[in-house]
Amino acid sequence: MFAGRTDWNLTPNRVSEALARHRAAAKPLLDLTASNPTACGFLYDREAILRALSNPAALTYEPDAKGLEFARRTVAAYYAARNTEISVDDVLLTTSTSEAYSFIFGTICDPGDELLIPGPSYPLFDFLADIQDVKLIRYPLIYDQGWRTDFHALEQAITSRSRGVIVVHPNNPTGHFAKPAEIARLNKICSAREMAIIADEVFLDFALGENPPPSFAANRSVLTFALSGLSKISGLPQMKAAWLITSGPEPMKQQALARLEVIADTYLSMNAPVQLALPTFLEQRHSFRQQLLARVRKNLAELDRQIAQQKSCGRLHLEGGWYAVLRVPAMRSDEDLAIDLLAAKNVYVHPGHFYDFPSDGYLIVSLITPERDFAEGITRLLTIF
Ligand SMILES: Cc1ncc(COP(=O)(O)O)c(C=O)c1O
Image 1 (cartoon, rainbow, N blue to C red):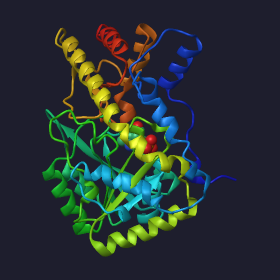
Image 2: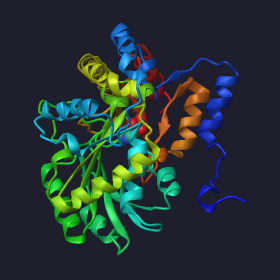
Image 3: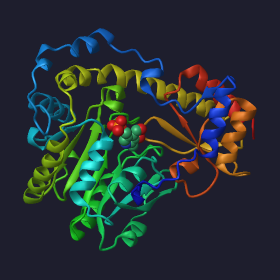
Image 4: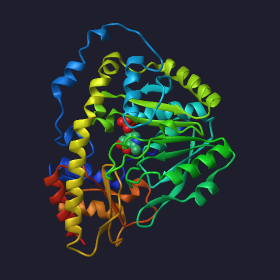
């Protein structure tokens, strides 16, 4: 009756089960995984957002497979403001980066083809790949006072079925950016084997350093798809607006765009009110980014202050994004540790295992957690060791 690709094991994992029991028992909870920006106490220009949704132009249906040109211009202007020149013709709007991923997978992969994905990384790709019959092959990131790509392992993982490499820039949860030398090496590898680069840049605006890291959106030497959207940039995941920028050698880029346009035209999933509101929504990013970075910096400083007062735990270096990776004694599995923290301290964190860390001894906390909860949660967490 059902397709093999949907034969998923849908039983909740032990940590989710423990959390559900905890919540059902109405026990107090310090949630250090909070990642919904609309529920973390940030201030939004509510009037501007709501006003933007009542544009009378939304009463007319004027479908455009790539998205309304007016809205795509706003996206091109966002890149121009970061000194990345892109053409409005290379922008395609989608309802989420997840949708953009599935359009790309459908464009470059036949059933059984492979895509390389970083490990550790955000556990988003498995279902997307299953739905498109794509096989994911992990390439390891290595930590040595900072994260870098294991290019030897990446090259070894390439087969005749490999169609592209996914780069999360900065990666979630490791918080590191691809460095210029790494981008050059990736370009060389992909260009030699006719593979594409898929760059997930949803956290690109949240660098902790002074200089904004460059986007992949104008990467010209290989076929490249750069993904981002309002979920993170403006902290508006509920608006369901994202985009995908295609770049690369001309004939290949045009072919990719033509194929993507057919897929997008088949669904026409973007709605008019949100597209018309895109300039206003993108404008929100300035205030949102400022508040978010202030929160991340404050929580990080508090984390470092508490870590300095004990000897068992540390944190890994990070360059941007919303998360911190804690290094903790691997006396039990990360999963058991997360369950124990919930039961004994009412603190909820993610085990590194969720993000494909290669060994135990890692916990992930969200740096956008409201500050008081964060400080109290970290205090309780550190007392368990
Ligand atoms: C690295 C990364 N990419 C994509 C997404 C999903 O973004 P969207 O809401 O646009 O699908 C997330 C969500 O947390 C993410 O962490």
